[in-house]
Amino acid sequence: MPGLKDIRKKMTGVRSTQQITRAMKMMATVKLRRAMDSYLSTHLYLEKLEQMVVDLRAVLPPNVSHPLFGGRAVKTTGIVLVTGERGLCGSFNHDLVKACLRRLQDNPGQEKKLILIGKKGVDHFRRLAFTVIGSHPDLVGKYSQKALGMAARNAISLYTTGVIDELVIIYTHFVSTLERRIETRILLPVSEIGVGRKSRHHGDQRIQFDPSPEAILTALIPRYVEGLFMKAVLESSASEQAARMVAMDAATDRAQEIIDELTMKFNRTRQSVITKELSEVIAGADAQTH
Image (tube, rainbow, N blue to C red; front, side, top):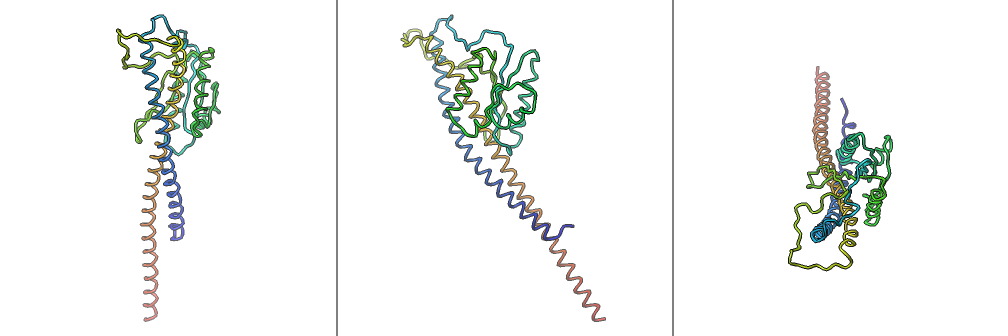
């Protein structure tokens, strides 16, 4: 049976851990707010850009297309996996890796190539025999719009140069602080733009373009794909911080439960020690009187 000193030492250790988990929860809360600000600004930009593409396609001739709209057979698939930078966020990274492994096992006849964003994904697939054509271990943690945009353009160039025939991104969709779900989205070829949106163009309106509609479309489509890429990374970053906040909150509560249990155990042990000492004193006094 542990003594009072052992119980007191264990209580001190749990309180120290509780202080760490509480501090990590506060840090995750601040980072979540920053990540949500970046995500919402990108989401608004993407909505406006999407509406522009829908309006433009409504007035373009049917034969006008773009290389990113596809049209070739898919022999090689590029998979962008967006994981977290650190652990201590529950099953967040584990679920993403499992989803990526399932995607890698689909369609065995297709070649799969990985683009890894996030340190956890890089560390995991470094030990496995998969082809990695892009690695960005600290892209999310040290957020930089310039670096994120460059990573997106590099992924698009892999498609335009024929290295891959399809670009898929696996990320975590942010629903709420307590809810998230893993999404798999095809970025390239661009198949659906503005699903459910209606063009603001009416038949009796005449729109003049400068430069030509084809040139505008050529400029907008890569930006649209780049925006989807950035949105997925930022949304996954917000989900990671939310998952860490929830995990640290649960760890803090569990630490308090352990402290309460140890406190009760400490009091019972102390009471037992005091009772034993009193019994010995009484027994000694009785022995002296006889």
